[in-house]
Image (cartoon, rainbow, N blue to C red):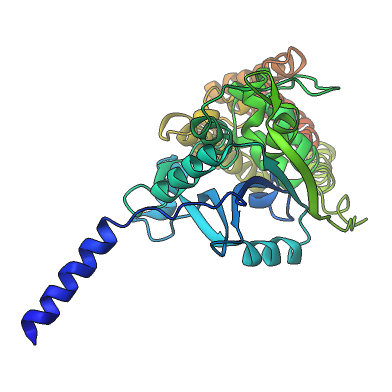
Amino acid sequence: MKLKLTLFLTLFILGITFAQQPQLSPNASISVLTFGPGESLNDAFGHNGFRIKDNTLGIDVVYGYGEYDFEAPNFYLKFAQGKLNYLISRHNFKNIYYGYSNANRTIKEQVLNLTLEEKQKLFNYLENNYKPENRRYLYDFFYDNCATRIRDVAQIATTSEIEFKTPKNFEEQTFRSLIHDHVGLNTWGSFGIDIALGSVIDRKASVKEHMFLPYYIHNFFETATLNDSKALVENSSILYEKNENNSSMDFVFSPLVIVGLIGLFILFLTYKDYKNNTRNKWLDLILFGTTGLIGLLILFLWFATDHSATANNYNLLWAFPLNLLVMVQLLKPQVKSWVIRYLKFLIIMFTLMTFHWIGGVQVFAIGLIPLLIALLVRYIYLVKWFSKTTLN
């Protein structure tokens, strides 16, 4: 009995190992799904996936790239460092449709104009990619994400060359402006992104690079051809269309309003200090401590991570890490003379930041404007205050 069981298990394992990939029927179709933006920042850019449908075999699944691997060791540290491996996913189409439609996200489908051989090749590639040993890959938001993988895998599957035509009314944009198209200019998402990401995303994206966004995968696939002779997309349809629901409260709690109130409060306390000939030490400690910590975070993202988009970040011109060292001096009734020179240096940094912004070297968050004005006024006041108290 034991021998029979062992023999059975051996044959079963060998059968799985050498089993052939299911062969798609002539009625099978492969399409690219484009999911519209969601409410959270994580979903703001949309998503893409391949849909494999074969009614003869009873197959209707969706493969997508960019799923989190929450079981990865040191998940949050690797995520922050840009060293986190993401996964290819495979889900039943019914579950995908229910999830995205229930989240009120548009679902568009483009059936690809592929031969049966190309469909089988694409299906085999995805199935092989989904194996545990192949599922993980090092994700990059701009150059290797859920959208770029769709473009690249589609090319691998076809024996023809995919020619991407420029759609009508297409205009090249910078990476940052493409992000703003999806998250807005005055949202907390864009506020955080504009502080965390450096000037490297303020260059113009090439036509191909626009396809890091699912929106452009749909647009470029729509006009693409195979060997410049036949259309890549056989037919297109909208499976679910989002119900628009704009909230009038979004602006009230936007960065420009909230940071604006903070800026007004700083200006009020500075004016109060000016009238009373005093200095609010706690205000200065909070301002220098906060800007210093933000500066340290920017340095960490720039030099201690593998994120390609956090380099050359000139937000350091207003969020200077050395502000943390100045805090000790701010507790004293009289500061050393170098503090005055340091404050003048910070004022010069604001001037450089303005030139960087106007010259297009780096675009900064518009929500920062009230804070930057308030900080500049505060620094000018501190120069005058310390010049008077230090000399006396």
